Image 1 (tube, rainbow, N blue to C red):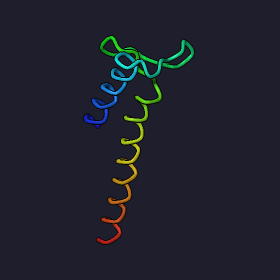
Image 2 (image 1 turned 90 degrees about the vertical axis):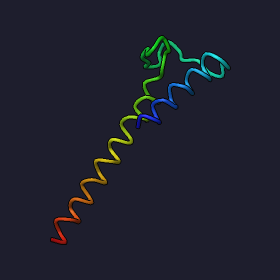
Image 3 (image 1 turned 60 degrees about the horizontal axis):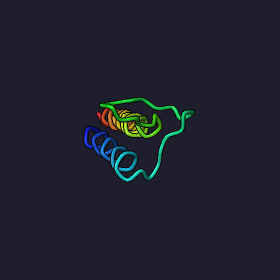
Image 4 (image 1 turned 180 degrees about the horizontal axis):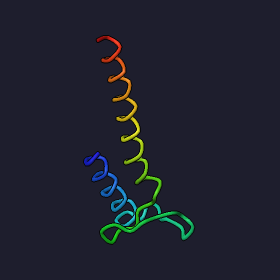
Length: 69
């Protein structure tokens, strides 16, 4: 997750500030981290999706461990 967040921050900086490939409108939900405006959607994608995947996987593997005991 840390690598994903670091990559997302770098990508946002590179594409929004350096290359000006895209920009967020005033209506886009965004936050400011380290002076960089980051869309809420990419941030949630790099946080919520991995946490959810790990949680589901953990529950499934714990269920399998208890069933085989």
